[in-house]
Length: 162
Image 1 (spheres, rainbow, N blue to C red):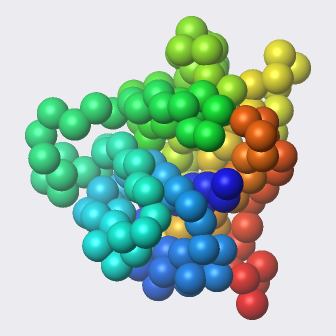
Image 2 (image 1 turned 60 degrees about the horizontal axis):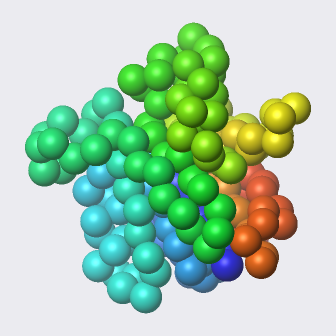
């Protein structure tokens, strides 16, 4: 199973569509800032299962009261999804990691900083920020899950899709 992770699109759909067309993911995760961009992709790619959370710029871009954190089992992997602004990730990811561990997550996905990152903590928790698919030429992340385990987790940029 292939998961495409996007964040901070800020109304820039071109790179998002390019990723969806090239990667052909089974699942798409949008981590906010602009929530309605993922709604457009949901309509354009109905075969892709979409998870999304609102970001700090989404107050008027999505229905009120949507959860800012989702924890879902996707193909046997427990995924913690949030934009990150409530965890103050621009200062430190410590609170984010604490909450993801409390939720017994295998991987934590967050955005907000526009800085792509993919690494594994010493305790085995995967941490991924896809960066911004709307700025700086665009970045996104891909997760491959095989037999209920993380096979690969990587950041991609527009040049990787050419």
